[in-house]
Structure formats: structure tokens, C-alpha cells
Length: 426
Image (tube, rainbow, N blue to C red; front, side, top):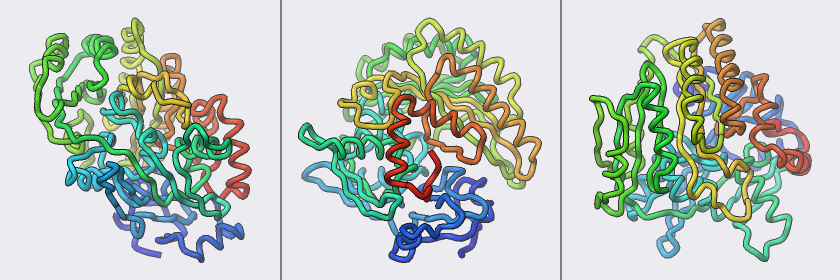
């Protein structure tokens, strides 16, 4: 057992009275897995520590951040190998030395769970999802059997195809991943605009953005106010006419501004209209991510639903956000992942928050998330399992919405590679 103080970035996970921590996937732990002596199950896996399910009361946690931190760049192929304890900020910092980049999300604190569950980035419209960049995966099935799988090619066998598809998007249910090899991309500057919008202006901006080129994307947050951000990748530091054309079509407020950033890691400096935690007030939260197709003429109807939800949010720390997909995320060939919602243009997510120890506020926030889901699923019928909730009553529903017709085959793979339920339930 080690000290729990600041053990996990997510405070909700940090405060769980866990059974203990394994810092290495050594022979002892593998033997416990093989002989089904992990008790209670499932074994919780921590890589970036941002998920509420990286720890659970009374459960054991395998914390990969201690002994799985290698980053190795292969300059001849512009590929990078990272171990499971590497977070996205460290990856970007390393790649910057070689003038390379990777489509991380808006937070650098996430671990490889960000990649393995899909990985939606402001750069995804140009480069595809994070899972689309994976070239090789190594780890252990939940049976304790070691594996190493390369991205399938046309001559690959059916077993390799199915295993790869399952691991890219559903790995947390089947395997403990120890390292992955990734394709990288040239490091380019990003031009960013941001502004505060009213609901009508947000609807206009959403409609406009659906016709943007793939190197531009929209991100918005609806908290105390509505804040919208546009990210536009440049070639080098050259600002082309495309950026100015977008700017000229946008609704704006008096606080509208544009600025240049060197790399995607600097997006974590964006200021969001969300009430910050005070020094003496610890907040917990749960997040539900949805997926859906282009809104087209339905953006005004969506805004009406969002206005109703935000008028009834449980507290000032609860909010709704969205990131834009499309472009290269639609064009992944051969459907080699468990991210089946390739027609999606939008990923909104609903964040319900509450004060530590306030059970009534927790119930209100979880009810609000469910109400939001019911209200928004007509626009966004899919689920993105960047956050997994086996401890909540909607877990089965979110799994069905995430995998749809692919789910029965995933259940078969679960019975083969995790027959004893060592990992998260599917």
C-alpha cells in the first residue's frame, strides 16, 4: 500500500478506499490473474489517472504510471513507441524535439486510455482518430497470455483482424496494454480563435462549421456562458486565406480574439466558462460522451434542448461541451476498430459535478446527466466510451450504444480473452 494523497488526478478516484496498488505487471501479479485470485474483481487499471474507474473501493489498482514510462522515437519511420504510463503531454513534448506531433485531445494529462478508447482531437478531422494512428499493440490478455499484434494488412488472417478491431476501441474490457507504436505527423503551428456566443450564435456557428475544411475544427463549452473555440492547422507558420474566410463568416462577440500557438499541447491553456473549485471545496464528476452525425438544419432544435438542460443543471460546475469530428475520421479503411460510429460529426459530452460528500448533489447530477442523454440522443444516438461507468446503472445502455451490432462479437471475445471477469465488465 502507498499513500493515497494526490495518487490520482481525478479526485473521485483519488479518494476511493482501495485495497492497494500494484506498480508492476510482474510474475506475481500475472500468476494471480492466471489463477483467478484477484479479489474483488475487476482489477482497476490506471494509466493517466483521469478516469473515475481507475480506482474503486475495496479493489486493487494496477498503476502503470510508475514503471511503464518509456518513449522511443524511430526517426527513419516517423513512428513512436510509448509505454502505458506515458501521458499525452509527455508524448507531445518528446515528439516536439523531432518536429513531429500527434493528435492528442484538449488535455495533456490523459494517458493511453485516450488513444485506446478512440481519441478525439481538434486535429482528428485532418489525421483521423488516435486509434487510427496505432501501428502495433503489446500487452496481456486478461487470461495472462502475452500478445504482440501489428496493424493488419490485406493478407492478415481473420483472428488478427478481429483481435485488432477489438483492441482498438474496446481494449479496457479485454486486455492490459503495456505499449503501443504510433504513426506521427509533422509539427505545424495552430491558429486559434475564441469568442463568447449566445445560443442563437452557437447554432449559426455549428451550421457553418460543418462545411469547414478538414484542417479546421470547432470546440464549444456551455457553462456560465457559451465559449466557442476554432482550431486551424497551418503549414508551418503561414496563415492562408482559408483561415480569414472562416473568420469573416463567424458570429462574434466583443471578446473575439485570435492567436497563434506552437503545438496542440498548448490548447490546455484555453480558459473555459466553468466555475473553478475553491481551495476548500473538492469536486467530483462523471462524464458521458455522445456521438452523432451532422446536424445540418437541426442545429436550432439542438440549441432549444440545450437551453432547457442548462436552465435545469444542478450546479455551476456542471456543463455541456462538444468537439467536431468528420473528415478523416469517416474515412478509416476496412473498419479496423471498435469505434463504429464513423458517420459522426459531433461528440458532445455532459459533465455532472458535485461537492465531495454531498450525496444529494451527486444524485441530482447523475439524474441530470441521464436526462441530458434522453434529451440529446435523438441528435446523438452513439456513445463514446472515453469514460466507462461500470459502477452506474446506465453502464449496459452505454455499452450497447457504443458498440451496437458489434457488441455480440465483443461478448464472444470477452468470454475467450477474459473468461473470469478480471477486467471491466462488458
